[in-house]
Image 1 (cartoon, rainbow, N blue to C red):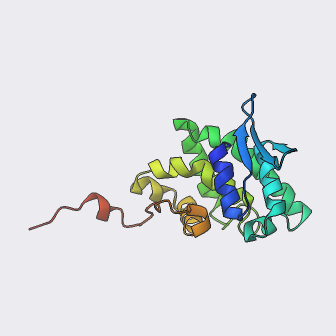
Image 2: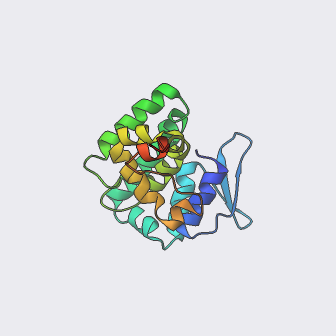
Image 3: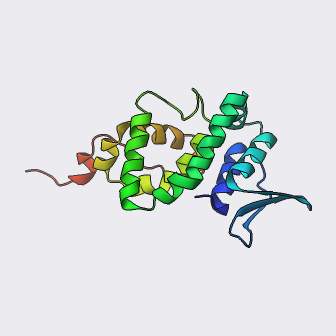
Length: 179
């Protein structure tokens, strides 16, 4: 999750040039801007991108000190728990259930607006959401609503095919004709 490709996607979402993004010798994601300025660590890099951006998500992520702190906590959570957890069958089920419960009463992770936290978690669980069957997606209806809402933004899905969240799951599964 906290890899070079994700940093580049989020930079693109924010409308900012990512600079040179790579893993250093210790396998920590690193961003180099210009000749001398280097930033290390996923959350720190995203914060630096947000400072350079005029996008809605960047502005929302730094609107107050409280919001900034909550966004940073979600970024760290995405790196330390969500990304690795989405690769484990048992942890991923609990992760999906927890997010589904969280989105019962929320539209976004922080406040009432899109932030870097939403982008980081979206990309962290993208492959997991992609692997779910239509029935599974219906079992996580609140999470599916949040995910689908984000993927509808062109800057988020970036030309990737949209995942199907049609609630009439039998349509895709039972396509045979009846006589």
